[in-house]
Structures are given as structure tokens and as C-alpha cells.
Length: 289
Image (cartoon, rainbow, N blue to C red):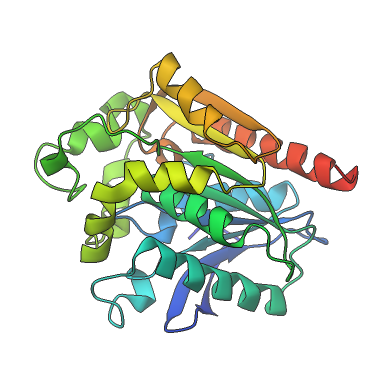
């Protein structure tokens, strides 16, 4: 772990979730809850190959709590939930975990979900199901990378992100990542639970239904070399139009990056853009909009 990052355990209803947390020196402006993708772990957001890669370190330096959670079926909960949970179950577990977190630390103005790949599916589901909850902490907004609606791969290529032939889809090219990234990332890789595999086939319909119920600001980011999802200009315009209840929607591209943006050379750029979007959400909250 990076300096200042420590492990914690959060209660999540039927299970306990392992997580990593970093905190600023003073009172936090808000709390970033980072949600990893399929077949990864929370350490995805604390990359060790270069000091600029870690979201946990950067967020704390800029005044935020950052909490990266091992989703249900990963880390500490893997033994209790060997098949994982469906998206709605994960959403409920995440809500309990965030409530437990808020009982332990000052979460500032609220919670901002920063999610990658399958974690983006969870973040969108969570916002649709719990975004209006009156119980603190309030949900400020979503920043989702590497997750669209329509796959750019055949159905038989969606089941396991680690299967043969998926390397390019996950990473893009070697030049996008600092030296030793793949040695260090070996500790982050985990089996993808069966319930997540089943959810993948239903996602295009689930995305459309969830997007229509999201009532907080949304930012979607696609790497320049994203191979899992369709993200031509017309695709992105259609995606943005599905968020009919969101106050505003930003769609962005990250140049010089592959799917695993937060482990690459452009991680700092992406994380700064995401935190800038959080600042826009905070400004909206402070003005009472």
C-alpha cells in the first residue's frame, strides 16, 4: 500500500467487506468511494508501479477521504459469497457498507462514487436504487470509466476478463503503463464470481433502466483504446440521452489509455479530471441547486 493508505473492514449486511482507506490531514471535503471492476481488487485504485498512479494518495492530498472497497465476492467476502452477488444485492451491500463507514469517519459533504468497468455497473445500479435516500451520507455524483451499454465483443467473450485473448481488451498496449505494472497487478487479479458473469448478458437492458432513474450528476469516461464497449460519437450521444433525470451528464475520452485507466501513465490525469467533476458536484450542492 502507498504511504497513508490502510486496510479497513466494513459491515455490509450478509457479509463483511475488506477495503483500503486514505484520509486528508484536516476535515474531508467529501468521500470518494472507489469501486473496482470484474476480476480485480480494491488495490486497483492504489497502483504501486509509479507514485502518480494511486487515486488513494492523490485524493487524500487534495482533501478527500478515499475508500476503495472490495466488492461482494472479492477479498474478505469471497469465502462467504463464493458466487458473488447480483447487482441489486451488491447495491444493497454497498449501501450498508457506506452507512457503516459514515458511522466511523466524517464523510464531509457526502459520497461520490468513482467506478471502473463492472464497478460502473454497480455504481449506476446503486444510484438508481439509493440515490434519493434521505439517510446520510448523500450521494453527490458518479464518475464511471470503462463501462458503456453496448458491448463491442461477442457474447462468448464477456464471461471472464482473464481468459485467453482478453489481454488487449483489458490493457491496450504495454506503452500505456509504467514498468512493473504487470508484476504488481498480479496481486490485484481475482476470479470473477458466477453471478457477475450472469449479469453481464443482461447489462444492455439494465443500463437503460438504471440510467433513467439516476438523479445525480454523471460523468462517463472511455479510454482512447477501449475495446470492451462501443463508444463512437453516436454511441456516446445516445448514452448521455438515457440519463433523463440527471442534472447534467458529461461524456469524456482519456487519450493514450487502455481499459485499465487507473493503472496507466494517464491515471493521474484521469483521477484529476474525476476529482474536478466532484468539485462541480460540490459547487452544485453548496449553491443549493
